[in-house]
Image 1 (cartoon, rainbow, N blue to C red):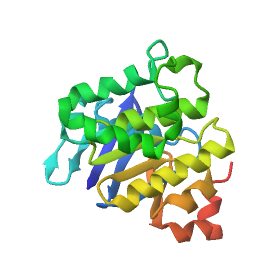
Image 2 (image 1 turned 45 degrees about the vertical axis):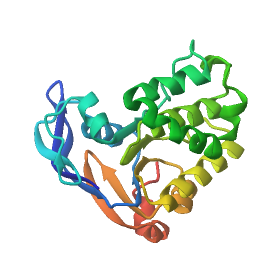
Image 3 (image 1 turned 120 degrees about the vertical axis):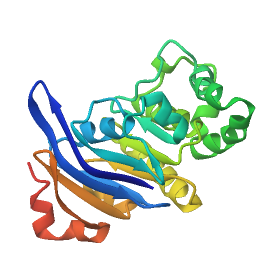
Image 4 (image 1 turned 180 degrees about the horizontal axis):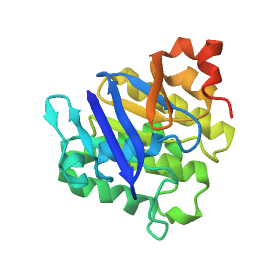
Length: 231
């Protein structure tokens, strides 16, 4: 579904990504892992078109996204939930969700009930300002908002960061349901190993801006693989 080929990115003359090759299969959930500062978030931004690439290509199915602006990539079917969630705190939950519906007009409304099924708390808090929600509720809102753009692939940047355990479980259950529906592929940046083992199908591990290990999610239990994740 998403294929990165030899992606390189530099900031202020420093190479951040070094020839990254990565693919997310249709209907799959792939975990991108690694220590802090190795290039995981930059990889998601390269897919979304939020950083300029020095070389390589990004493809969504048969569509070459390379050179497209972020809004064009969104319309092609790339959904992005950034680290820190980035909801609109002064808008209500419903107003946050409606912003995504604008992209697809009345065709987006059939997904609203699905979002409420995945995250029932959002339906109970439609009139509340986004800024008064807990961190976990804001994360559910951010994922729900992204789902309303009808993505073919969903990029999630550390959705469990700073979230209480019971909501981590709810988010995990939602991702499993999304995966089982078979309509959306997911690329998940995450450092919480048990979460990845619970929801993932496969993994990539980054170190110093390049992929150093990959395989089925069961291999994350290998001692040699775990060493790449320890701080």
